[in-house]
Amino acid sequence: MRILRAIVLFIAVCVVSSAAAAASAPVAVVEALHEKLIETMKQADQLGMDGRYRALQPILEESFDFQRMIAAAAGSYWAQASEAERQRLTEAFTTLSITTYAARFNAWTGESFETLGERAGPRDSVFVDTRLNRPKDPAVPITYVLTETDGRWRIVDVLLDKSISELAVRRSEYSQVLRSGGPEKLAEVLDQKAAELRTP
Image 1 (cartoon, one colour):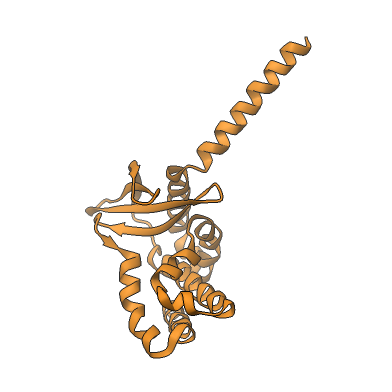
Image 2: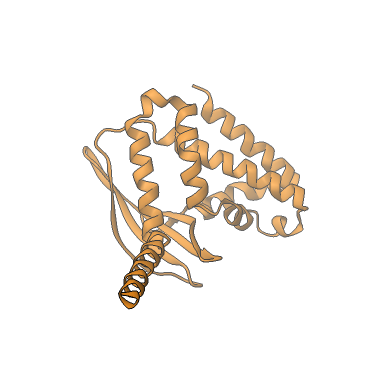
């Protein structure tokens, strides 16, 4: 009887471990994000801009490595920045990113996300290929780039049409601001952009 209980317990532990591993996989991260985006889009009107921000904030902060993203976008300026400047810049970038999603996903007209698969990327990253299906318009290919840190997969870039890197676009946009005013100036610009998106 004890042996039987031990076997049952072992199987249960294996099942839990397998479920936990699956939940942390790159595809699972992306699909959880997509599920929340669709849910928020369906409630967009009743939530309003602030409501969509609050609804999306937890899943976006869990799915994206915003600190790693702004560090890559800021380049050498990040390496030279103080800890306080890095924290300020990360907070501003995170707020703008969430605000942007809340502003973009402001209605639902039958859209759906479809996962196409995953593939190995450079430097131990993983690409998760998806598309946003739209009833009246062509589907939009979206590829998420994820990396693993401390056993946790998170998104570090998004490729539109399999070629346009959002992180590369941000790096280009931010370079002039960083040259003229450094991290503090960039944080101010990001805050201003977020405020503009919130304005009806």
